[in-house]
Length: 320
Length: 220
Ligand code: HEM
Image (cartoon, rainbow over all chains, first blue to last red; front, side):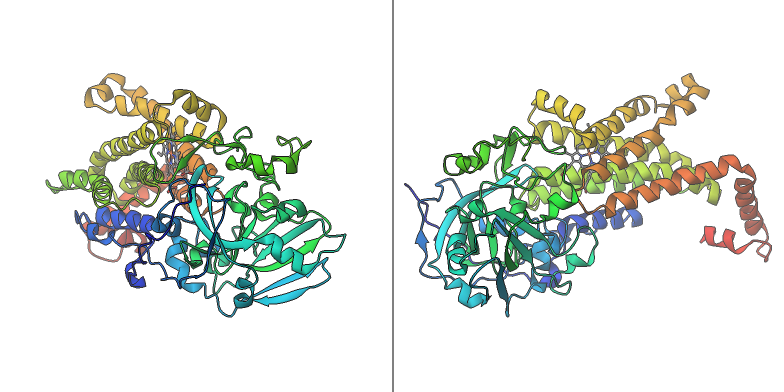
């Protein structure tokens, strides 16, 4: 299988934070100010900033993986400047702007619940737990856009095996950090904080499911869910919870944030499925970031061969 | 009224378009330019629509009748940005996939509301010429009440399309509520409107203290 090399990474451009503002809000207010004063053309030179990205530390010793796609990868800039991460703001450009708030050291991840070996891992130990692999995956957002992202990480299953789940462990619950100082978006009551997600045990054990700690050869930028996040490529992006502090093994299906808030719109499973429309967006097509024409969305985001059997016998229109 | 003000307002209404063009030229339309253009033009359509609705209450409060000259211009610019918004959706987003577009309009409440708003604005734009105003007479005013529904549908459109952060659509909704509410107040109690304007002329005629604080505020 042809695997694209990712050594054409441009080192991150650093713009002083003060010069970078949320572009859309800013354009609106710049225009508004200009309109109000009648001072034509003022404010035009304000919009040229590049998103600030924390220059990442390189992660060495990364294995390639046969699970990777050979499709054209989205640029580092696109992946790190267009994010849904409400903890750092609700506009797509906000997380890159607010990335500096999210300090990721010290950081621990507690593995607990129905396991024989509960343990609180320091993030630096967790990263060394298992050899890192590059996984170039398609990422399909529920908002009908998609990207191809070269993640670095390791299979979630390797952590699960170390924890030794008991027979009662049927699901895994994941919890994001709760800290409005480091996650200023949590000051807004737009959803119940902290963000939570869940997987069925077999989904969590699936070899495609990874915990990611980096992308494009560098440690994960804050706006992408640093220091550690889940990546489940056959599900809509919101299932891949970011900035995890707790992994809890449970017997019953745990709550998942969007599902809890709007159960008619977001199911617990949320497998990418062009046949099940979301009330707001068509799921039949998607726009790959960087392309003009929409593409047809693939069932299970194109990972059906590997994962369809997890759901055999289930009515996916009902368990969406 | 200042003679240069009208062209100045006209040019000011083109600033957002210029800004969009400039950002396109410099490659600053975010990772998802089509979404950005859609949202940018949609926002300006709504802002200008609400601005056009602000003319009448402002005129009643300040007694500055010449403001009426700007109402049509603001309304037409709102329509202009709404048309760009729809064209972005039709050409850039769906590339003339009319089947998908019709399905969207019928099936998704937020698109239905946006479409309703746009359709309601069409007869208003067509009948905005001086000769149409003359021809339609009293019916012109009745017809142009549609703008209230167009604005309400646009706010609803915005409210229904956000996933969780409803702050901006709610802000626009509040502005609309104040603008429509002021019309109710003025029509239920014409005396209030008269008081506003008489106080204002009193304040202007005699610089003395008979003018209330309110009228002074409205002048400044
Ligand atoms: C057929 C008519 C219309 C269609 C198909 C349409 C479609 C859309 C779409 C696809 C979005 C972006 C949704 C997203 O990014 O998730 C949007 C946003 C928006 N539209 Fe429309 N729209 C229509 C008419 C209108 C009209 C007439 C107005 C105002 C007068 C308007 C105001 C807005 C606003 C304010 C937004 C949100 C902008 C933001 O997120 O900042 N739309 N519309």
